[in-house]
Length: 605
Image (cartoon, rainbow, N blue to C red; front, top):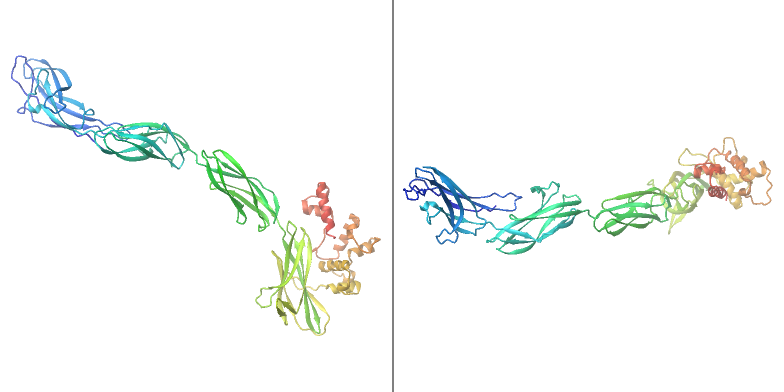
Protein backbone atom coordinates (compact mmCIF):
# COMPACT_ATOMS: atom_id res chain seq x y z
CA UNK A 1 0.00 0.00 0.00
CA UNK A 2 1.38 3.41 -0.96
CA UNK A 3 1.93 6.04 1.75
CA UNK A 4 2.95 9.69 1.73
CA UNK A 5 6.38 10.43 3.20
CA UNK A 6 6.58 13.79 4.96
CA UNK A 7 9.58 14.57 7.16
CA UNK A 8 9.81 17.62 9.42
CA UNK A 9 11.75 19.29 12.31
CA UNK A 10 10.06 20.31 15.53
CA UNK A 11 9.41 24.02 15.67
CA UNK A 12 10.79 25.39 18.89
CA UNK A 13 9.83 28.77 20.46
CA UNK A 14 12.67 31.19 21.48
CA UNK A 15 12.57 33.52 24.50
CA UNK A 16 13.00 37.19 23.47
CA UNK A 17 14.06 40.23 25.34
CA UNK A 18 11.57 42.96 26.10
CA UNK A 19 10.62 44.99 23.14
CA UNK A 20 8.32 47.95 22.77
CA UNK A 21 5.51 45.91 21.40
CA UNK A 22 5.95 43.15 23.93
CA UNK A 23 5.71 40.53 21.25
CA UNK A 24 6.25 36.85 22.16
CA UNK A 25 9.24 35.30 20.50
CA UNK A 26 9.98 31.78 19.27
CA UNK A 27 12.37 29.86 21.46
CA UNK A 28 15.83 29.13 20.11
CA UNK A 29 17.93 25.96 20.26
CA UNK A 30 19.41 26.84 23.65
CA UNK A 31 16.09 26.43 25.44
CA UNK A 32 14.36 23.60 23.56
CA UNK A 33 15.75 20.36 22.12
CA UNK A 34 15.16 19.93 18.39
CA UNK A 35 12.74 17.14 17.55
CA UNK A 36 11.60 15.31 14.45
CA UNK A 37 7.99 14.95 13.42
CA UNK A 38 6.58 12.74 10.76
CA UNK A 39 3.82 13.04 8.26
CA UNK A 40 1.08 10.55 8.92
CA UNK A 41 -0.60 9.16 5.81
CA UNK A 42 -4.11 7.90 6.51
CA UNK A 43 -4.39 4.11 6.21
CA UNK A 44 -6.80 3.13 3.47
CA UNK A 45 -8.93 0.00 3.81
CA UNK A 46 -10.12 -2.23 0.99
CA UNK A 47 -13.40 -0.34 0.75
CA UNK A 48 -11.90 3.16 0.75
CA UNK A 49 -11.78 5.05 -2.52
CA UNK A 50 -9.46 7.89 -1.40
CA UNK A 51 -6.04 8.38 0.12
CA UNK A 52 -4.82 11.58 1.79
CA UNK A 53 -1.38 12.57 3.04
CA UNK A 54 -1.47 14.43 6.41
CA UNK A 55 1.37 16.55 7.80
CA UNK A 56 1.60 17.27 11.55
CA UNK A 57 3.80 20.21 12.53
CA UNK A 58 4.35 21.25 16.14
CA UNK A 59 6.11 24.19 17.78
CA UNK A 60 6.59 25.60 21.26
CA UNK A 61 5.60 29.25 21.81
CA UNK A 62 6.60 31.07 24.98
CA UNK A 63 5.42 34.46 26.38
CA UNK A 64 8.36 35.77 28.41
CA UNK A 65 6.54 38.91 29.57
CA UNK A 66 5.01 39.41 33.01
CA UNK A 67 1.67 40.26 31.47
CA UNK A 68 -0.68 38.45 29.16
CA UNK A 69 -0.80 39.34 25.51
CA UNK A 70 -2.74 38.31 22.41
CA UNK A 71 -0.86 37.57 19.21
CA UNK A 72 -1.49 35.93 15.80
CA UNK A 73 0.65 32.90 15.05
CA UNK A 74 1.08 32.00 11.34
CA UNK A 75 2.06 28.75 9.60
CA UNK A 76 3.60 29.64 6.23
CA UNK A 77 4.76 27.64 3.25
CA UNK A 78 7.59 28.23 0.81
CA UNK A 79 5.68 26.72 -2.10
CA UNK A 80 8.16 27.43 -4.93
CA UNK A 81 11.39 26.86 -2.99
CA UNK A 82 12.78 30.40 -3.39
CA UNK A 83 13.32 30.88 0.37
CA UNK A 84 10.36 33.19 0.73
CA UNK A 85 7.43 31.96 2.81
CA UNK A 86 4.81 33.54 0.59
CA UNK A 87 1.82 31.34 1.43
CA UNK A 88 0.05 31.52 4.78
CA UNK A 89 -1.66 28.15 5.16
CA UNK A 90 -2.96 28.61 8.73
CA UNK A 91 -3.32 31.45 11.21
CA UNK A 92 -4.34 31.42 14.85
CA UNK A 93 -5.25 34.40 17.06
CA UNK A 94 -4.21 33.35 20.57
CA UNK A 95 -3.90 34.77 24.09
CA UNK A 96 -0.76 33.90 26.03
CA UNK A 97 -0.64 34.35 29.77
CA UNK A 98 2.39 35.80 31.53
CA UNK A 99 5.31 33.36 31.27
CA UNK A 100 3.15 30.77 29.47
CA UNK A 101 4.90 28.10 27.41
CA UNK A 102 2.48 26.39 24.95
CA UNK A 103 2.92 23.59 22.50
CA UNK A 104 1.06 24.24 19.22
CA UNK A 105 0.20 21.60 16.61
CA UNK A 106 -0.69 22.31 12.99
CA UNK A 107 -2.33 19.70 10.75
CA UNK A 108 -1.99 20.11 7.02
CA UNK A 109 -3.07 17.88 4.16
CA UNK A 110 -0.76 17.45 1.19
CA UNK A 111 -3.29 16.38 -1.43
CA UNK A 112 -2.87 19.73 -3.29
CA UNK A 113 0.89 19.57 -3.40
CA UNK A 114 2.91 18.18 -6.25
CA UNK A 115 5.64 15.74 -5.46
CA UNK A 116 8.76 17.49 -4.14
CA UNK A 117 10.42 19.17 -1.09
CA UNK A 118 8.73 22.04 0.78
CA UNK A 119 9.62 24.23 3.80
CA UNK A 120 7.13 25.32 6.41
CA UNK A 121 7.80 28.08 8.98
CA UNK A 122 6.04 29.44 12.09
CA UNK A 123 5.84 33.25 12.37
CA UNK A 124 4.30 35.92 14.49
CA UNK A 125 2.17 38.20 12.45
CA UNK A 126 4.18 41.22 11.29
CA UNK A 127 7.46 39.34 11.13
CA UNK A 128 9.00 38.28 7.88
CA UNK A 129 11.44 35.84 9.31
CA UNK A 130 11.39 33.20 11.96
CA UNK A 131 13.33 33.79 15.11
CA UNK A 132 15.48 30.73 14.45
CA UNK A 133 16.14 28.04 11.88
CA UNK A 134 14.51 25.61 14.29
CA UNK A 135 11.26 27.39 13.50
CA UNK A 136 11.24 25.90 9.97
CA UNK A 137 10.82 22.40 8.67
CA UNK A 138 11.51 20.74 5.33
CA UNK A 139 9.06 18.12 4.12
CA UNK A 140 9.36 15.64 1.22
CA UNK A 141 5.94 15.08 -0.41
CA UNK A 142 5.29 11.95 -2.44
CA UNK A 143 1.66 11.89 -3.62
CA UNK A 144 0.14 8.47 -4.46
CA UNK A 145 -0.99 7.80 -8.04
CA UNK A 146 -4.67 8.57 -8.56
CA UNK A 147 -6.56 6.27 -10.95
CA UNK A 148 -9.89 7.71 -12.04
CA UNK A 149 -12.65 5.47 -13.44
CA UNK A 150 -15.12 6.42 -16.17
CA UNK A 151 -17.47 4.92 -18.77
CA UNK A 152 -18.54 2.20 -16.33
CA UNK A 153 -21.78 0.51 -17.54
CA UNK A 154 -24.87 0.95 -15.38
CA UNK A 155 -25.87 -2.69 -15.85
CA UNK A 156 -24.42 -5.92 -17.25
CA UNK A 157 -25.69 -9.47 -17.77
CA UNK A 158 -23.95 -12.79 -17.22
CA UNK A 159 -25.11 -16.39 -17.50
CA UNK A 160 -24.69 -18.35 -14.30
CA UNK A 161 -21.40 -20.29 -14.09
CA UNK A 162 -19.98 -18.21 -16.92
CA UNK A 163 -17.79 -15.08 -17.00
CA UNK A 164 -18.54 -11.70 -18.56
CA UNK A 165 -16.25 -8.68 -19.05
CA UNK A 166 -17.07 -5.30 -17.48
CA UNK A 167 -15.32 -2.66 -19.62
CA UNK A 168 -14.36 0.85 -18.44
CA UNK A 169 -11.80 3.64 -18.90
CA UNK A 170 -9.03 4.13 -16.31
CA UNK A 171 -6.97 7.36 -16.20
CA UNK A 172 -3.89 8.06 -14.06
CA UNK A 173 -4.41 11.69 -12.93
CA UNK A 174 -1.34 11.53 -10.69
CA UNK A 175 2.13 12.78 -11.58
CA UNK A 176 4.01 9.50 -11.48
CA UNK A 177 3.92 6.24 -13.45
CA UNK A 178 2.41 3.48 -11.34
CA UNK A 179 0.85 0.04 -11.36
CA UNK A 180 -2.43 -0.34 -9.52
CA UNK A 181 -5.25 -2.95 -9.27
CA UNK A 182 -8.84 -2.35 -10.34
CA UNK A 183 -11.19 -4.60 -8.41
CA UNK A 184 -14.78 -5.68 -8.98
CA UNK A 185 -17.12 -6.63 -6.13
CA UNK A 186 -20.66 -8.07 -6.22
CA UNK A 187 -23.00 -7.72 -3.25
CA UNK A 188 -23.93 -11.41 -3.29
CA UNK A 189 -25.76 -11.42 0.06
CA UNK A 190 -27.66 -8.19 -0.62
CA UNK A 191 -26.60 -6.49 2.63
CA UNK A 192 -25.44 -3.30 0.88
CA UNK A 193 -21.80 -3.98 1.73
CA UNK A 194 -18.95 -5.23 -0.45
CA UNK A 195 -16.84 -7.64 1.56
CA UNK A 196 -13.51 -9.08 0.54
CA UNK A 197 -15.18 -12.46 0.06
CA UNK A 198 -17.50 -10.88 -2.53
CA UNK A 199 -14.74 -9.95 -4.95
CA UNK A 200 -15.75 -11.23 -8.38
CA UNK A 201 -12.79 -10.11 -10.49
CA UNK A 202 -9.59 -8.04 -10.58
CA UNK A 203 -7.15 -6.66 -13.14
CA UNK A 204 -3.82 -4.87 -12.64
CA UNK A 205 -2.59 -2.17 -15.02
CA UNK A 206 0.34 0.24 -15.25
CA UNK A 207 -0.21 3.81 -16.44
CA UNK A 208 1.94 6.86 -17.05
CA UNK A 209 0.79 10.24 -15.69
CA UNK A 210 -2.35 11.43 -17.54
CA UNK A 211 -2.49 8.15 -19.48
CA UNK A 212 -5.92 6.53 -20.08
CA UNK A 213 -6.67 2.98 -21.10
CA UNK A 214 -9.79 0.96 -21.90
CA UNK A 215 -9.71 -2.16 -19.74
CA UNK A 216 -11.99 -5.10 -18.91
CA UNK A 217 -12.47 -6.79 -15.58
CA UNK A 218 -13.82 -10.35 -15.65
CA UNK A 219 -16.95 -10.91 -13.56
CA UNK A 220 -17.23 -14.56 -12.54
CA UNK A 221 -20.72 -15.77 -11.62
CA UNK A 222 -19.87 -19.23 -10.30
CA UNK A 223 -21.37 -18.72 -6.84
CA UNK A 224 -24.28 -16.46 -7.81
CA UNK A 225 -27.85 -17.64 -8.08
CA UNK A 226 -29.96 -16.19 -10.92
CA UNK A 227 -31.14 -12.70 -9.98
CA UNK A 228 -30.00 -9.05 -9.90
CA UNK A 229 -27.14 -7.77 -7.69
CA UNK A 230 -25.31 -4.49 -7.08
CA UNK A 231 -21.68 -4.32 -8.11
CA UNK A 232 -18.88 -1.88 -7.38
CA UNK A 233 -15.71 -1.44 -9.37
CA UNK A 234 -12.89 0.48 -7.70
CA UNK A 235 -9.31 1.64 -7.81
CA UNK A 236 -7.51 2.83 -4.68
CA UNK A 237 -8.77 6.37 -5.25
CA UNK A 238 -12.09 6.05 -7.10
CA UNK A 239 -15.14 3.81 -7.36
CA UNK A 240 -18.27 3.37 -9.51
CA UNK A 241 -21.42 1.29 -9.08
CA UNK A 242 -23.87 -0.61 -11.24
CA UNK A 243 -25.95 -3.76 -11.24
CA UNK A 244 -25.44 -7.21 -12.70
CA UNK A 245 -28.21 -9.61 -13.73
CA UNK A 246 -27.32 -13.30 -13.46
CA UNK A 247 -29.29 -15.31 -16.01
CA UNK A 248 -30.34 -18.94 -15.85
CA UNK A 249 -28.30 -20.97 -18.34
CA UNK A 250 -30.06 -22.88 -21.08
CA UNK A 251 -31.59 -25.86 -19.25
CA UNK A 252 -33.42 -28.53 -21.19
CA UNK A 253 -36.30 -30.56 -19.75
CA UNK A 254 -37.74 -33.56 -21.55
CA UNK A 255 -41.06 -35.42 -21.32
CA UNK A 256 -42.47 -38.39 -23.21
CA UNK A 257 -45.95 -37.10 -24.06
CA UNK A 258 -47.25 -39.91 -26.26
CA UNK A 259 -46.43 -43.60 -26.64
CA UNK A 260 -48.39 -46.73 -27.52
CA UNK A 261 -49.36 -49.13 -24.75
CA UNK A 262 -48.49 -52.13 -26.94
CA UNK A 263 -46.52 -52.77 -30.08
CA UNK A 264 -45.88 -56.00 -31.92
CA UNK A 265 -42.23 -56.90 -32.19
CA UNK A 266 -41.02 -56.08 -35.67
CA UNK A 267 -43.36 -53.13 -36.00
CA UNK A 268 -41.97 -49.63 -35.28
CA UNK A 269 -42.73 -47.90 -31.99
CA UNK A 270 -43.60 -44.22 -32.35
CA UNK A 271 -42.83 -41.88 -29.43
CA UNK A 272 -43.58 -38.16 -29.05
CA UNK A 273 -41.10 -36.29 -26.86
CA UNK A 274 -41.58 -32.74 -25.59
CA UNK A 275 -38.29 -30.78 -25.18
CA UNK A 276 -38.31 -27.43 -23.32
CA UNK A 277 -35.64 -24.82 -22.60
CA UNK A 278 -36.42 -23.46 -19.11
CA UNK A 279 -33.36 -21.18 -19.02
CA UNK A 280 -33.02 -17.43 -19.76
CA UNK A 281 -30.82 -17.81 -22.84
CA UNK A 282 -30.83 -19.76 -26.08
CA UNK A 283 -29.09 -23.12 -26.04
CA UNK A 284 -28.42 -26.32 -27.96
CA UNK A 285 -28.86 -29.81 -26.52
CA UNK A 286 -28.60 -33.39 -27.74
CA UNK A 287 -31.68 -35.46 -26.93
CA UNK A 288 -31.39 -39.27 -26.76
CA UNK A 289 -34.45 -41.49 -27.09
CA UNK A 290 -34.08 -45.25 -26.85
CA UNK A 291 -34.49 -48.45 -24.91
CA UNK A 292 -33.32 -47.99 -21.35
CA UNK A 293 -31.30 -51.21 -21.33
CA UNK A 294 -29.68 -50.61 -24.69
CA UNK A 295 -30.89 -51.58 -28.10
CA UNK A 296 -32.60 -49.28 -30.57
CA UNK A 297 -32.04 -45.57 -30.00
CA UNK A 298 -32.10 -42.24 -31.80
CA UNK A 299 -30.44 -38.89 -31.08
CA UNK A 300 -31.37 -35.41 -32.23
CA UNK A 301 -29.76 -32.01 -31.67
CA UNK A 302 -32.22 -29.30 -30.64
CA UNK A 303 -31.67 -25.52 -30.48
CA UNK A 304 -34.27 -23.53 -28.50
CA UNK A 305 -34.66 -19.95 -27.39
CA UNK A 306 -35.44 -19.17 -23.75
CA UNK A 307 -38.78 -20.51 -22.45
CA UNK A 308 -39.69 -22.30 -25.67
CA UNK A 309 -40.51 -25.93 -26.46
CA UNK A 310 -40.65 -28.32 -29.38
CA UNK A 311 -41.99 -31.83 -29.95
CA UNK A 312 -39.84 -34.59 -31.44
CA UNK A 313 -41.50 -37.54 -33.15
CA UNK A 314 -39.18 -40.51 -32.85
CA UNK A 315 -39.60 -43.89 -34.55
CA UNK A 316 -37.62 -46.86 -33.22
CA UNK A 317 -37.20 -50.38 -34.57
CA UNK A 318 -38.41 -53.26 -32.37
CA UNK A 319 -37.06 -56.17 -34.41
CA UNK A 320 -34.49 -56.99 -31.70
CA UNK A 321 -36.50 -55.84 -28.69
CA UNK A 322 -37.17 -58.22 -25.84
CA UNK A 323 -40.70 -59.48 -25.45
CA UNK A 324 -42.67 -57.99 -22.57
CA UNK A 325 -42.40 -54.59 -20.90
CA UNK A 326 -39.69 -52.41 -22.42
CA UNK A 327 -38.72 -49.08 -20.87
CA UNK A 328 -38.04 -46.29 -23.33
CA UNK A 329 -36.17 -43.25 -21.99
CA UNK A 330 -35.82 -39.73 -23.35
CA UNK A 331 -32.87 -37.89 -21.82
CA UNK A 332 -30.82 -34.70 -21.94
CA UNK A 333 -27.76 -33.77 -19.90
CA UNK A 334 -29.93 -32.62 -16.97
CA UNK A 335 -33.26 -34.47 -17.26
CA UNK A 336 -34.86 -37.71 -18.35
CA UNK A 337 -38.30 -39.27 -18.61
CA UNK A 338 -39.38 -42.86 -19.25
CA UNK A 339 -42.39 -44.73 -20.53
CA UNK A 340 -43.15 -48.45 -20.60
CA UNK A 341 -44.33 -50.09 -23.80
CA UNK A 342 -45.36 -53.72 -23.88
CA UNK A 343 -43.72 -55.44 -26.83
CA UNK A 344 -45.96 -58.25 -27.99
CA UNK A 345 -43.97 -61.14 -29.42
CA UNK A 346 -44.43 -64.82 -30.08
CA UNK A 347 -42.79 -67.23 -27.67
CA UNK A 348 -42.62 -70.75 -29.00
CA UNK A 349 -42.44 -73.42 -26.30
CA UNK A 350 -41.50 -77.03 -26.99
CA UNK A 351 -43.25 -79.85 -25.11
CA UNK A 352 -44.28 -83.49 -25.42
CA UNK A 353 -41.05 -84.60 -27.05
CA UNK A 354 -41.29 -88.19 -28.32
CA UNK A 355 -39.32 -90.49 -30.54
CA UNK A 356 -40.11 -93.78 -32.23
CA UNK A 357 -37.88 -96.23 -34.03
CA UNK A 358 -38.59 -98.47 -36.98
CA UNK A 359 -36.66 -101.70 -37.53
CA UNK A 360 -35.87 -103.39 -40.79
CA UNK A 361 -34.12 -106.74 -40.78
CA UNK A 362 -33.54 -106.52 -37.04
CA UNK A 363 -31.88 -103.10 -37.17
CA UNK A 364 -33.16 -99.62 -36.61
CA UNK A 365 -33.92 -98.13 -40.02
CA UNK A 366 -35.02 -94.68 -38.96
CA UNK A 367 -35.90 -92.60 -35.94
CA UNK A 368 -38.98 -90.42 -35.94
CA UNK A 369 -39.08 -87.46 -33.53
CA UNK A 370 -42.20 -85.47 -32.71
CA UNK A 371 -42.73 -82.49 -30.44
CA UNK A 372 -45.48 -80.05 -29.72
CA UNK A 373 -44.75 -76.38 -30.34
CA UNK A 374 -47.06 -73.88 -28.63
CA UNK A 375 -47.11 -70.12 -29.08
CA UNK A 376 -47.29 -68.99 -25.45
CA UNK A 377 -46.52 -65.38 -26.36
CA UNK A 378 -48.86 -62.48 -26.97
CA UNK A 379 -48.43 -62.09 -30.73
CA UNK A 380 -48.67 -64.33 -33.75
CA UNK A 381 -45.43 -65.22 -35.40
CA UNK A 382 -43.28 -67.64 -37.33
CA UNK A 383 -40.18 -69.45 -36.21
CA UNK A 384 -37.83 -72.16 -37.41
CA UNK A 385 -37.74 -75.20 -35.13
CA UNK A 386 -34.85 -77.64 -35.49
CA UNK A 387 -33.99 -81.22 -34.56
CA UNK A 388 -30.48 -81.64 -33.18
CA UNK A 389 -28.61 -84.84 -32.33
CA UNK A 390 -25.37 -85.25 -30.40
CA UNK A 391 -23.21 -87.13 -32.88
CA UNK A 392 -19.78 -86.40 -31.37
CA UNK A 393 -20.60 -87.42 -27.79
CA UNK A 394 -20.02 -84.03 -26.17
CA UNK A 395 -23.58 -83.96 -24.72
CA UNK A 396 -24.39 -80.94 -26.88
CA UNK A 397 -26.72 -81.81 -29.79
CA UNK A 398 -25.53 -80.37 -33.10
CA UNK A 399 -27.53 -78.79 -35.88
CA UNK A 400 -28.01 -81.30 -38.67
CA UNK A 401 -30.12 -79.29 -41.08
CA UNK A 402 -33.43 -80.77 -39.95
CA UNK A 403 -35.70 -77.73 -39.69
CA UNK A 404 -39.41 -77.00 -39.69
CA UNK A 405 -40.98 -73.57 -40.21
CA UNK A 406 -43.88 -73.03 -37.82
CA UNK A 407 -46.43 -70.20 -37.92
CA UNK A 408 -48.77 -69.91 -34.96
CA UNK A 409 -51.30 -67.48 -33.61
CA UNK A 410 -51.49 -66.66 -29.93
CA UNK A 411 -52.19 -69.86 -27.99
CA UNK A 412 -52.05 -72.06 -31.07
CA UNK A 413 -50.18 -75.38 -31.13
CA UNK A 414 -48.66 -77.59 -33.75
CA UNK A 415 -46.89 -80.92 -33.72
CA UNK A 416 -43.66 -81.03 -35.67
CA UNK A 417 -42.20 -84.27 -36.94
CA UNK A 418 -38.73 -85.27 -38.08
CA UNK A 419 -37.71 -88.61 -39.59
CA UNK A 420 -33.99 -89.35 -39.54
CA UNK A 421 -32.56 -92.38 -41.30
CA UNK A 422 -29.65 -94.10 -39.60
CA UNK A 423 -27.67 -93.14 -42.66
CA UNK A 424 -28.33 -89.65 -44.03
CA UNK A 425 -26.66 -86.88 -45.96
CA UNK A 426 -25.38 -83.84 -44.15
CA UNK A 427 -24.11 -81.34 -46.67
CA UNK A 428 -21.68 -83.20 -48.89
CA UNK A 429 -21.00 -85.89 -46.29
CA UNK A 430 -22.89 -89.02 -45.32
CA UNK A 431 -23.63 -89.28 -41.62
CA UNK A 432 -24.35 -92.57 -39.90
CA UNK A 433 -26.00 -93.41 -36.60
CA UNK A 434 -24.20 -96.57 -35.45
CA UNK A 435 -25.51 -98.65 -32.57
CA UNK A 436 -25.51 -96.57 -29.42
CA UNK A 437 -27.40 -94.04 -27.35
CA UNK A 438 -27.82 -90.44 -28.51
CA UNK A 439 -28.98 -87.24 -26.93
CA UNK A 440 -31.45 -85.50 -29.19
CA UNK A 441 -33.73 -82.52 -28.86
CA UNK A 442 -36.11 -80.16 -30.55
CA UNK A 443 -35.06 -76.51 -30.27
CA UNK A 444 -37.01 -73.29 -30.68
CA UNK A 445 -35.47 -69.85 -30.13
CA UNK A 446 -36.50 -69.60 -26.49
CA UNK A 447 -37.32 -73.17 -25.55
CA UNK A 448 -35.99 -76.66 -26.01
CA UNK A 449 -36.61 -80.22 -24.93
CA UNK A 450 -34.08 -83.05 -24.98
CA UNK A 451 -34.15 -86.80 -24.41
CA UNK A 452 -32.16 -89.89 -25.34
CA UNK A 453 -32.77 -92.48 -28.03
CA UNK A 454 -31.02 -95.79 -28.74
CA UNK A 455 -29.97 -97.16 -32.09
CA UNK A 456 -29.67 -100.95 -31.65
CA UNK A 457 -30.14 -104.36 -33.14
CA UNK A 458 -33.33 -106.23 -32.38
CA UNK A 459 -34.22 -109.75 -33.27
CA UNK A 460 -37.24 -109.80 -35.50
CA UNK A 461 -38.30 -106.76 -37.48
CA UNK A 462 -41.09 -104.69 -38.84
CA UNK A 463 -42.08 -103.34 -35.41
CA UNK A 464 -41.71 -99.97 -33.79
CA UNK A 465 -41.46 -98.54 -30.29
CA UNK A 466 -41.81 -95.06 -28.90
CA UNK A 467 -40.20 -93.21 -25.98
CA UNK A 468 -41.71 -90.29 -24.20
CA UNK A 469 -40.98 -86.72 -23.09
CA UNK A 470 -37.67 -85.97 -21.38
CA UNK A 471 -39.52 -84.36 -18.48
CA UNK A 472 -40.81 -87.67 -17.11
CA UNK A 473 -40.15 -91.37 -16.99
CA UNK A 474 -40.21 -93.18 -20.30
CA UNK A 475 -43.85 -93.79 -21.26
CA UNK A 476 -45.16 -96.06 -23.99
CA UNK A 477 -47.43 -94.40 -26.51
CA UNK A 478 -49.28 -95.77 -29.46
CA UNK A 479 -47.67 -94.75 -32.71
CA UNK A 480 -49.57 -93.17 -35.57
CA UNK A 481 -49.53 -96.50 -37.42
CA UNK A 482 -50.83 -98.38 -34.37
CA UNK A 483 -53.73 -95.98 -33.96
CA UNK A 484 -54.53 -96.10 -37.68
CA UNK A 485 -54.32 -99.91 -37.74
CA UNK A 486 -56.48 -100.22 -34.63
CA UNK A 487 -59.21 -97.90 -35.88
CA UNK A 488 -59.15 -98.36 -39.65
CA UNK A 489 -56.99 -101.41 -40.37
CA UNK A 490 -54.55 -99.49 -42.56
CA UNK A 491 -51.24 -97.71 -42.03
CA UNK A 492 -51.19 -94.03 -41.22
CA UNK A 493 -49.74 -93.08 -44.62
CA UNK A 494 -52.69 -94.70 -46.40
CA UNK A 495 -55.27 -92.44 -44.74
CA UNK A 496 -56.78 -89.33 -46.28
CA UNK A 497 -55.55 -85.93 -45.19
CA UNK A 498 -58.67 -85.23 -43.08
CA UNK A 499 -58.47 -88.58 -41.28
CA UNK A 500 -54.74 -88.17 -40.74
CA UNK A 501 -55.38 -84.94 -38.89
CA UNK A 502 -57.86 -86.70 -36.61
CA UNK A 503 -55.38 -89.51 -35.91
CA UNK A 504 -52.62 -86.96 -35.26
CA UNK A 505 -54.76 -85.22 -32.69
CA UNK A 506 -55.47 -88.51 -30.87
CA UNK A 507 -51.77 -89.32 -31.03
CA UNK A 508 -50.86 -85.91 -29.61
CA UNK A 509 -53.35 -86.09 -26.73
CA UNK A 510 -51.95 -89.37 -25.30
CA UNK A 511 -51.90 -90.95 -22.79
CA UNK A 512 -55.49 -92.20 -22.71
CA UNK A 513 -57.54 -92.46 -19.55
CA UNK A 514 -56.94 -95.65 -17.62
CA UNK A 515 -58.60 -98.71 -19.14
CA UNK A 516 -59.38 -97.06 -22.47
CA UNK A 517 -57.97 -99.02 -25.42
CA UNK A 518 -56.90 -97.45 -28.68
CA UNK A 519 -59.82 -99.02 -30.46
CA UNK A 520 -62.23 -97.33 -28.04
CA UNK A 521 -60.94 -93.82 -28.60
CA UNK A 522 -63.29 -91.80 -30.83
CA UNK A 523 -62.65 -88.83 -33.05
CA UNK A 524 -64.94 -85.79 -32.99
CA UNK A 525 -66.57 -86.98 -36.17
CA UNK A 526 -67.29 -90.38 -34.60
CA UNK A 527 -68.84 -88.70 -31.53
CA UNK A 528 -71.03 -86.57 -33.79
CA UNK A 529 -72.26 -89.56 -35.82
CA UNK A 530 -72.44 -92.25 -33.14
CA UNK A 531 -73.43 -90.38 -29.99
CA UNK A 532 -75.41 -87.45 -31.32
CA UNK A 533 -76.80 -88.97 -34.53
CA UNK A 534 -75.61 -86.12 -36.66
CA UNK A 535 -76.50 -86.79 -40.28
CA UNK A 536 -73.69 -85.30 -42.30
CA UNK A 537 -74.67 -84.65 -45.90
CA UNK A 538 -71.07 -84.23 -47.02
CA UNK A 539 -68.54 -86.98 -46.73
CA UNK A 540 -66.12 -84.33 -45.36
CA UNK A 541 -66.66 -83.63 -41.69
CA UNK A 542 -66.67 -79.88 -40.86
CA UNK A 543 -66.81 -79.62 -37.09
CA UNK A 544 -67.03 -75.83 -37.20
CA UNK A 545 -70.35 -76.01 -39.07
CA UNK A 546 -72.12 -77.72 -36.18
CA UNK A 547 -74.26 -75.81 -33.72
CA UNK A 548 -72.01 -74.16 -31.16
CA UNK A 549 -73.63 -75.85 -28.16
CA UNK A 550 -73.25 -79.25 -29.89
CA UNK A 551 -69.62 -78.44 -30.66
CA UNK A 552 -68.98 -77.77 -26.99
CA UNK A 553 -70.63 -81.05 -25.86
CA UNK A 554 -68.61 -83.06 -28.40
CA UNK A 555 -65.42 -81.26 -27.34
CA UNK A 556 -66.05 -82.19 -23.70
CA UNK A 557 -66.60 -85.83 -24.67
CA UNK A 558 -63.44 -85.86 -26.75
CA UNK A 559 -61.32 -84.34 -23.93
CA UNK A 560 -62.62 -86.89 -21.41
CA UNK A 561 -60.75 -89.67 -23.23
CA UNK A 562 -57.33 -88.31 -22.22
CA UNK A 563 -55.49 -87.82 -18.94
CA UNK A 564 -53.67 -84.71 -20.14
CA UNK A 565 -55.12 -81.42 -21.27
CA UNK A 566 -52.02 -80.80 -23.36
CA UNK A 567 -53.32 -79.87 -26.77
CA UNK A 568 -56.80 -79.38 -25.43
CA UNK A 569 -58.86 -77.05 -27.54
CA UNK A 570 -60.97 -74.29 -26.07
CA UNK A 571 -64.33 -75.78 -25.20
CA UNK A 572 -66.48 -72.65 -25.11
CA UNK A 573 -66.71 -68.96 -25.93
CA UNK A 574 -66.69 -68.19 -22.22
CA UNK A 575 -63.41 -70.04 -21.73
CA UNK A 576 -61.80 -68.13 -24.58
CA UNK A 577 -63.27 -64.79 -23.38
CA UNK A 578 -61.74 -65.35 -19.94
CA UNK A 579 -58.42 -66.25 -21.51
CA UNK A 580 -58.31 -63.24 -23.83
CA UNK A 581 -60.15 -60.53 -21.89
CA UNK A 582 -60.49 -61.75 -18.32
CA UNK A 583 -64.29 -61.71 -18.32
CA UNK A 584 -67.25 -63.80 -19.50
CA UNK A 585 -68.45 -63.74 -23.09
CA UNK A 586 -71.66 -61.74 -22.50
CA UNK A 587 -69.71 -58.87 -20.93
CA UNK A 588 -67.67 -58.26 -24.08
CA UNK A 589 -68.25 -55.59 -26.71
CA UNK A 590 -69.60 -56.65 -30.08
CA UNK A 591 -66.14 -56.38 -31.61
CA UNK A 592 -64.62 -58.50 -28.82
CA UNK A 593 -67.35 -61.11 -29.18
CA UNK A 594 -66.66 -61.42 -32.91
CA UNK A 595 -62.95 -61.78 -32.17
CA UNK A 596 -63.69 -64.61 -29.70
CA UNK A 597 -65.96 -66.39 -32.19
CA UNK A 598 -63.37 -66.06 -34.94
CA UNK A 599 -60.58 -67.40 -32.72
CA UNK A 600 -62.82 -70.27 -31.61
CA UNK A 601 -63.62 -71.25 -35.24
CA UNK A 602 -60.00 -71.06 -36.36
CA UNK A 603 -58.89 -73.75 -33.92
CA UNK A 604 -60.90 -76.30 -35.91
CA UNK A 605 -59.67 -75.29 -39.34
